[in-house]
Image 1 (spheres, rainbow, N blue to C red):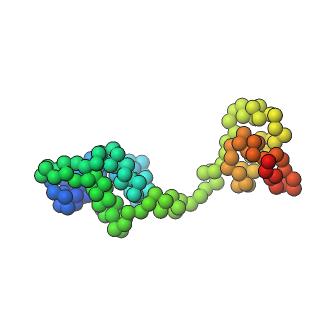
Image 2: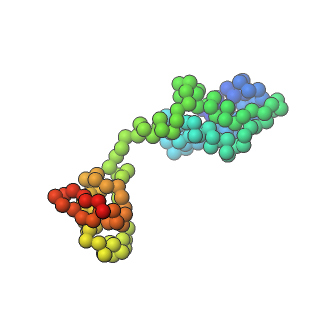
Length: 158
């Protein structure tokens, strides 16, 4: 479905009441459209954990205009099934399809960290090279604590 209003109308047909009873919940589920309009905006809330987060925010159930209590999780599940081919993906389903980029695991040496770690023979330059070559994602101080030194370009763990 293209719009939260259509989901709200669908909820009213399925659970009773009127679309307005469900609008706020469907607006929240699709709230990530505010910063990314492509379908991958769904990775933020269109999954099983998103259903439980909706329940945490909106309560266990809503009472619609017909006086019926409807579980929030059921409404969220309906929305997600309508958007995701009849299934409720897991958060892992979304995250496992993210293409890794180098910037996602690049460490950054904060100002002053080199002075703080001056007690170790491991240099910030060497740590930066390790990060750039994808051999560590550790922060500099953690890296210094973990490795005693290098031989032949390979780490020797303490």
